[in-house]
Length: 90
Image 1 (cartoon, rainbow, N blue to C red):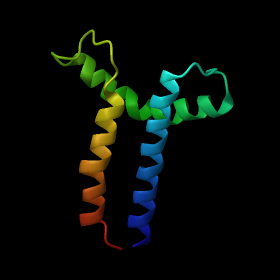
Image 2: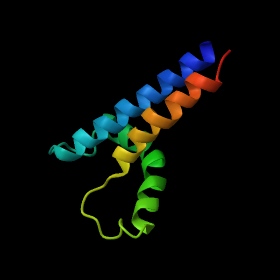
Image 3: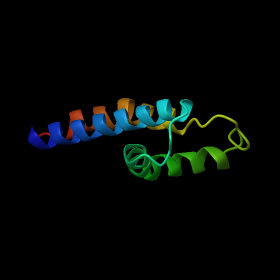
Image 4: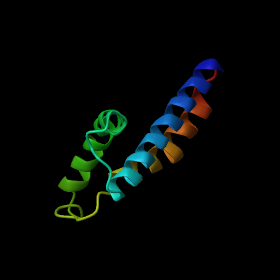
């Protein structure tokens, strides 16, 4: 139960950080702020592989909007959370 709770909490934190990154990208905030840099450093390793997959797809090349945060959020909410809830039972 503790492992399941810990993994779920970690996924929630990642979801919130991805959401914060999306909001930050819309606002004229200084990117050299330590908190902003922390958010970018934590989320970039998660978003970059998804962004690369989208760019390599037939629909993704040359898109003006970055859909990787949406894909990451959907993966967390509809794939990882149900998997953790179903298979991690300690």
